[in-house]
Amino acid sequence: MAPENKNRATAAAILPLVGGARNVTSIAHCMTRLRLSLADRSLVDDEVLKALPAVLGVVEDDTYQIVLGPGTVARVTPEFEALVEEDRAAAPAPEHTLTAEELAAQGAALKEARKAKNATPFKLFLRRIANIFVPLIPALIGCGIIAGINGLLTNLEWLPSITPALAAIASGFMALIAVFVGFNTAKEFGGTPILGGAVAAIIVFPGVANIEAFGQKLSPGQGGVLGALGAAVLATYIEKWCRRWVPEALDVLVTPTITVLLSGLVTIFGLMFLAGEVSTGIGAAANWLLDNTGAFAGLVLGGLFLPLVMLGLHQALIPIHTTLIEQQGYTVLLPILAMAGAGQVGCAIAVFKRLRHNTSIRTTIKSALPAGFLGVGEPLIYGVSLPLGRPFITACVGGAAGGAFIGFFSMIGEKVGSTAIGPSGWALFPLLDGNKGLGLTVAIYGGGLLVGYAVGFLATYFFGFSKQMLVELNVGRAPQTKQAMSSSRLVTPVLR
Image 1: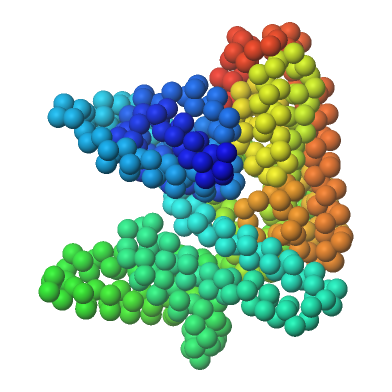
Image 2 (image 1 turned 90 degrees about the horizontal axis):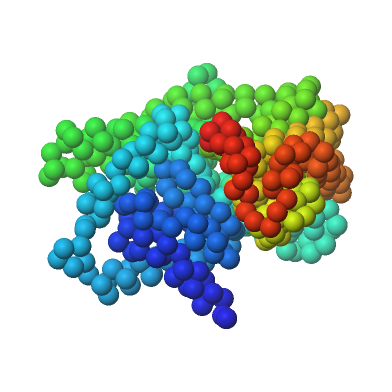
């Protein structure tokens, strides 16, 4: 089957299981998940959907998220969008068919209960942060890998005529990332995206070097992505104020002018300096933490990252990673956090070994493990460790051990960083950078992965199951026994 036919077949299989085209109100995707807003959640056939070969898992949040994996999701989503449009065009709603609004009302109680659980102000804020930065990740990854290739060629003194071009390609996006952050921020907060980008562009404009604020000369890029985010939010609120008070006949001239002028002045004479101080503080704090408490910091960060992902709190780290990449060329936090995925992989292998007769779980592990090695952990989390309960905890123990390993080397001056955010596991190798040479950096990161695999495996093998769990789960069916369901109920509310 041709790849495009395979992707279309996957989309066609998913569509009826989520209630059909008229039940889908919006479609989007991130690096691994197809994200759908649904008019009536009760129309989804979860069990059949999860059983599809291409589906690695599903996640309940403000949207219904179907885990397809990196690469696949970017190819299936446009096919899914096309099918939705085709179905709507080919079969207009009959006179007595429920409208989307009526379907929404029909499932209102279920949706509101789910939203109430997930729509805390802090979680909504983190989702907005993610919506701003997640679309930038593909460019960060691509440019980061090119930067790594360029660094390798430069160190080896190969292709000297090509390396300047590679440097320009790798650095161009990072030089203007503030503009993209401003654009996405205004879009997310309900303003005009191009005005957010215009105000954020002030931060990277070389001419700001001629301006003095707070008794010192500004420097291009000062404040970075944090300054761009603040400038665009301010521009959005000024624009909304103008829309309310400026007469319609003058709106097209006056609103953009006032928006850019006022927010631009505040950015130059306030936000750039303040955001620059905050950015510097973040970099200094991260370095101090790893320099002085490296092993302990790595243990805590590596051990808690899986629960942070379950709670959605990991999104708060995206601006911090981006700020560190802007300042130092790499983020020292991501390789440590990636150890959580290593613990998860070791845990899954131990579950595979312990539950020799449970063909359902073993099949899930065999299909999800390759993605786990590449840093895509959702299939193993939602399909294996989290429903079982104890193995989720032992996976965190493996992540803590790997994090402590990398943190220890950072404490003795051997820093390991990533030039981009997004992938982890083996997929992070092309993005690695550090302060003591690529060979040592790769060796330390690889050592951390091995420690995470080993400790995750051993902790799960020896402590991940009670005797009763082994008896009840070691059968040729899915983990729906009383003990498994009890474990799932005990763990899941804590981690979501």
